[in-house]
Length: 138
Image (cartoon, rainbow, N blue to C red; front, side, top):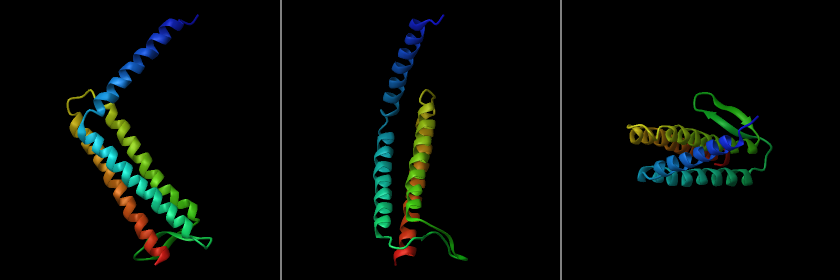
């Protein structure tokens, strides 16, 4: 038979340890700043893509432009939403990996490295969205 009391105890203990790790993770000021900066940058990316999507009047738009070869990918305007979504996925993956290392001594270095690289990638995605806007609408 199942030991429901043991299962309940295990789940309760895992929940309390998880909250303790989250509290420790967000106790660092730099982690809060990374989350705030990423939230603003990702919100800006979603708003840019929404604005571009509202301006499209043709069926296809340029999704990738190469300086040497010119247009290399065409698609629907709805496919632009993939860009900020990938930035969000990349940041959440790095945050989860960083959260995994909260019990180690070099946590501060690893969290700055992982969250900083995700924030840098988000800014590159913002630049890519701006370049797509210039290619399509200017």
